[in-house]
Image 1: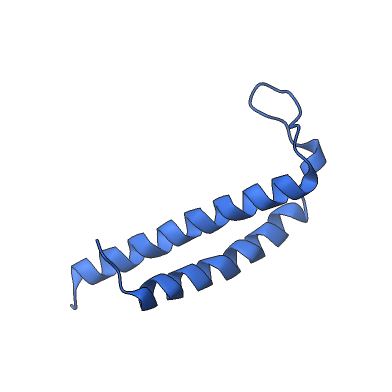
Image 2: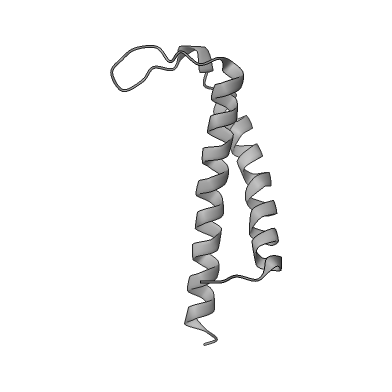
Length: 79
C-alpha cells in the first residue's frame, strides 16, 4: 500500500509526540536500572540506551497503529 507523503508525515509526527508522552509516563514509574530480562538477569544497558530503545519501540508501535487505522478507514470508504 503506497501512502502519500502527507499521510506519512501526519502519522509520523503525531506518533512521535505520543511516543514522547508515553515515554514520560512509563519512566516516571519505572527505573531503567531495575529492569531485568526474561531470564531474570539484569539488563546490561545504560539508562540512556533503555530510554532510547523504549522510545523507538513506542514510536514504531504507535505509528503502525496509526497507519493501520488510516488504511482500514480508507478501505471502508464513506457510509
